[in-house]
Amino acid sequence: MKTLILFAHTFWENSKVNKALLESVQDTPNLTIENLTLTCPNGNIDVEAQKALLKNADTIIFQFPLFWFSTPSLLKEWQDRVLTGILYGSEPKMLEGKSFGIVTTAGGAESSYDGHHGATIEDIFVPIYHSFKYLGVKPKKPFCIFSANAQNLPLADYKAYVGA
Image 1 (cartoon, helix red, strand yellow):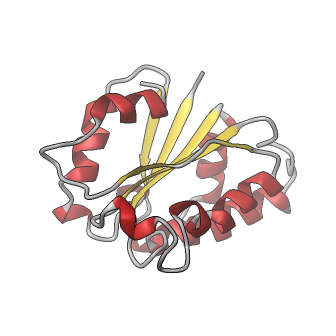
Image 2 (image 1 turned 90 degrees about the vertical axis):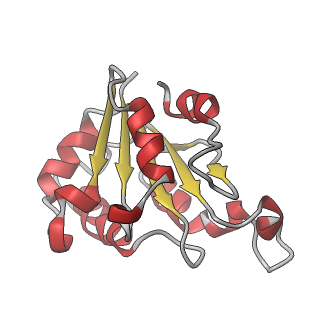
Image 3 (image 1 turned 180 degrees about the horizontal axis):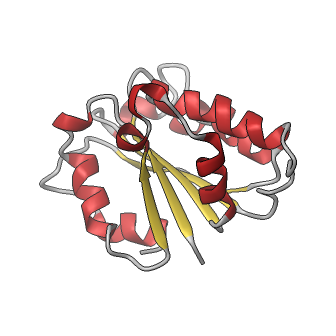
């Protein structure tokens, strides 16, 4: 199984938690990390290159820190350009049968995402999962690290989720 982690972080240079997570799996065979923050400067997304990465993966994972109940803007731009390019391109069914999941880190406690503010963590991700499901991709339950702290990360659980 080949896994592709598509990662974005608005404040990458200051990241501690996500850098530690990615470093823990960077040498894993059959796992590719695409740090969009570095490979797509100024939001310049090479759609064909991204489609090639997707085509080669069995499992696709979005990884990002949760800010304002959403993804970093670069990841949304990626969705707009790449997923639209797939749907209206020459291979609209290229993602069928693949799996999709989300790894996210949140500074807040798990209780902040239990629905008492109007939405659970799963509710927040409905549009992302729906987009991939629309393209024939099977969903994996999201993996969220709440109260994220670089000194106390659930690395074994994270590695299991991403297939490392």
